[in-house]
Length: 276
Image 1: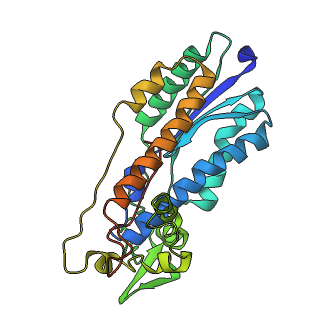
Image 2 (image 1 turned 120 degrees about the vertical axis):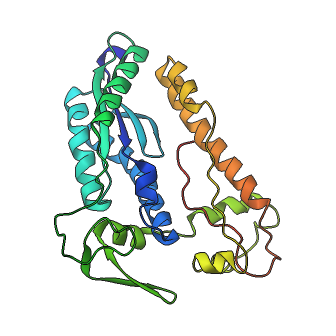
């Protein structure tokens, strides 16, 4: 029942700082992949702690989960932190709750949100790691010591990476977004290998002889809409509809500028897509 539920809200700290800590597009795209994996992993972690847990929202590093069991709700934060420490070093996360829904879903959600905001204000951006001031610095972000043996090569570029940037570098799944093109008749029959071969090898290849631009888009009013939803089921329905709408809009924008008959690499690369 609603009175037996416990809400926990979580949000990755300083998402933009984490995504773009490195000046290199490969690590930015890898950071995006790690956040997408995290959003998917949240449901598994919640179900492990409480088989009846209900993930109401999980996108863009923001999560809202309803637990039937208070013990599972209270163990959620530690389990999430342990997962991120292992799979996405350098990611911080803040929590609000657990808050009982005995007085209603809206009241519990608002209480969890206030708790999250208070914890956010404490500040969790790791900033620069100065534990080893004489160490070789990561040549991608400059924030952390480089790891021995962690020198990577991209084209003619060779650089030493720290733990967080190395994980981003290795995590990049560059072709994940290519399926968005399949909704267009002109792309649906292009073989997978041919499609992947159209990806630019690096930012210089993507730009060619032209300038390289970065476009950031964010839906207006999504947060306000979520705050007005008073029912647990409606919250989950809106979450799914928002995710589907973002994918549809992103696909339309890419297809408008990509043509399989165009010579050279695809003129676009998706670095991050999550939430709104």
